Each structure stands twice: as structure tokens, then as C-alpha cells.
Image (cartoon, rainbow, N blue to C red; front, side):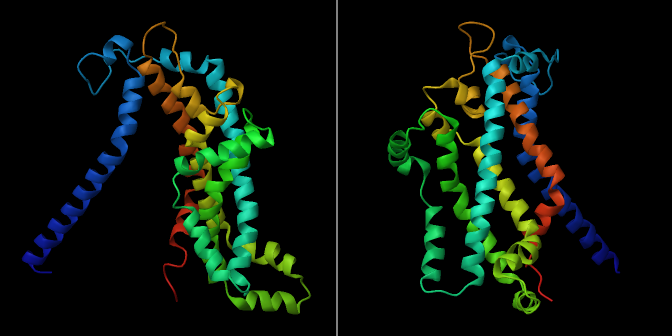
Length: 283
């Protein structure tokens, strides 16, 4: 390698790592700022901004975790998000198998209809969902969220899984049928395990969507604080000091809410990478 080529290589590597640092700073700084703010006092948070707390303390986390409505919101969010993921994966896997492996009239139209469902903003169908929830008598309960959240998580779950089912070799089904397996046995014993990376990826995305959803939660549980999820609990957080905006406590609550998502990503990171890169290389 000549000296000029070596210098060019070093310059390219330096530019690459500089770009990585810029991206990491841009993406991680909001999380750092939230954690930094959560360790400050109310007086310090309204003073000129500092990047390091002068007197770090965890009393804000103690106040948040001692709040009954916040703890109830965490439990409600865990139940709602977990069941939403379960519904989305069970129903979505059956739908994706049918749309990806079976040939029937109207299949392409249905695929595009599924894709079109992801384009509607929540606010555009809120009034219709509100009427349905009231008519079914589940308004003000967790059931109203379990009824409406899959409307938004199912379309992208089906769309992603369809691509995975399409990519599986047809010889797998043929061999299973020759061995005497039924279509259902072929689905859940052979094809479904092969889509595990996609199931994990879409399941995690559905969990994050349900965990962070606010508009439907605040609209359908406004009359029952005990059924509210954690984003609503944070929005209505009053703090421990009357007539004062609890900024630092809200920041502490935001950090607490983010921790489960980080833990899930760390646990399933290998499956997530497999799900995102599957099909990228053909050989």
C-alpha cells in the first residue's frame, strides 16, 4: 500500500468513525438529558442548563415509584402491551401464512388493503372507535384498549410476516405433506419456528407501539384512572409539591418507562438483527 493510499484509508476510517459518533450523539443525547434532568431538583431544573447535576439525587425516582397511579399504569401497560403482542402474533401469523403461502382470488388486493390500513393516522378513526367502544360497553376499561390496539399493530405484523412466509422454500411443505402432516401441523411445527426472527422483531415493535400509545388510552380510560396506562399516568402526574409543575419527576418517570424497552431489546437483540437482515443475502 502506497503512502497516499494509506493516508486515504486513514482519512476514510476517521470520517466513518466521526459519522458514527455524530449519529450516536444525536440519538443518545435525549436519553442522557432525560436522565440528567431526573437527578436534579426543581430549583436546579429552572436554572441555566447544566450537563451534569450539581447535587445528584434519586428522590425523584422514589417519589415516582411511590405514586400509586404510576405503579398501576405500569402494570396496566404491561398487561395491555403483552396481550396486544400475543393477539397480533397469533392472528397475524395465521393471516400472513394464508396471504404468503396460499393462492386464492383477491390475495393481492387484500395485501394492499393491509398495507393501506397502516396509512391512517389514529386521530382520523378515533371518533369511530369511540362509538364502537361505547356501544360494546367496554368504555373506561382495559378491554377497550385490547380491542383497539390490534387495529394498528396487526397490519404491519401481517405485512412483515408475509414476506418471511413467502421466502420459505416450498419443498418444506411438500416434504411435510408427504410424511403425513396436515396443513396446520406443517404451519405450526415447521414453518412457524423458521419465522422466529420475524416474530420477535414484529412482536417487539407491537409491544413498543402499545406501550407508548397515548391518544386511545387517554380517550377510552378518561373516566377510570385505575385502567389508565403509563403514558397517561405520566401526563397526569401531579408530583409531591402542590401548584408546581413536576418536571424532574416526569423526567424520572420517563426514564423508568424506558427501562423495560431497553431490557427487551438487549434480550432479543440477536433475533432482532436476524429478523432485520433475513433475506438480505441470497445464495
